[in-house]
Length: 196
Image 1: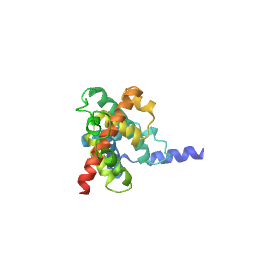
Image 2 (image 1 turned 135 degrees about the vertical axis):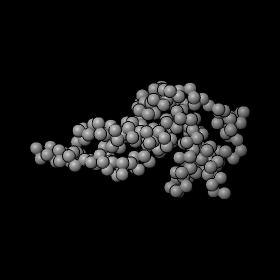
Image 3 (image 1 turned 30 degrees about the vertical axis):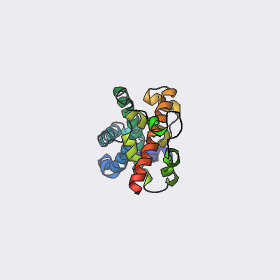
Image 4 (image 1 turned 90 degrees about the horizontal axis):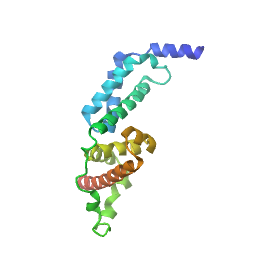
């Protein structure tokens, strides 16, 4: 009985009037890091606040308001990605294969590619890594970036990613493979540009 009373008290203490000021920036940054599009990030955060207002009675009072809103935001992000992938299914066609820039006609590494490819990853703890990764993610086709973000950043399982993106496991593997190659190449290039 005491636990139910605390939940009711916590629920009644919720104040949607301060959500934008108190949580808006954090939710926006989270959405932007996943969607790589400022307008889309703003849209899903607004949808999150509206869904929070609409379902305010579902807030149990356990955990923080921000955590509850973040849970809603994650679902809104997945919904946005699902819709974007349905409408842009064929707009992310590859323009040239990144493999051609990394391997010669016999399948051997081109000179200096293999030795420098992973250099930025050796300094993952350095502050320079994350901004470069974010910029490289923005350069990827949406489907590749979504697959990579869901798998490597959000740590979703293959089955869940395939369900969210409406693709097969083999399609996911291809998207991840291409995304990793492009990211490695982009990271290497940008890393050397910014370090020189």
